[in-house]
Length: 204
Image (cartoon, rainbow, N blue to C red):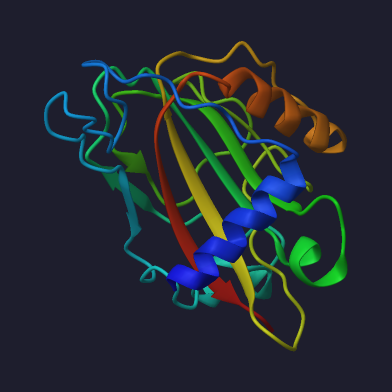
């Protein structure tokens, strides 16, 4: 899976054009960067109870179950000190890797998840949430499950970012998904304390 993740990371950079700069974590070293100034911060970890990293996501959470398939439960740990919010991006980089597209498919973007959160429950409600989280996908203001056709597996990446701030990015519409994603990525610049990646495979 390591080589696949490297390819997926490269696809993300190509799709976004840039990647948010890492903030300096409390203590001066940044996440997983000891730099001779004390022990490195343990890396942020994200898991799901529904599949193992790199495994096949159950049909229940995909478009095989319908357009309103529930989002999977996600859990994370080893949160960097000073985290004020999280951003979760789920995307399919296959159009970039295999079809030469300049933008991959945004299946879920949710930002301003409270910094005290340790995960997301199954079947997150649509739209702006009571805790202030905002979300969008290419289809709605909610999770959009994997929908790859028959053929090679697509690799859906869930990227979790721990930030040292909340983002002043308004709730967008599905038609504004690309613009909203760009705004979120730009607002994250210089505020990322840590990142975790979870990969799920799917095809019909």
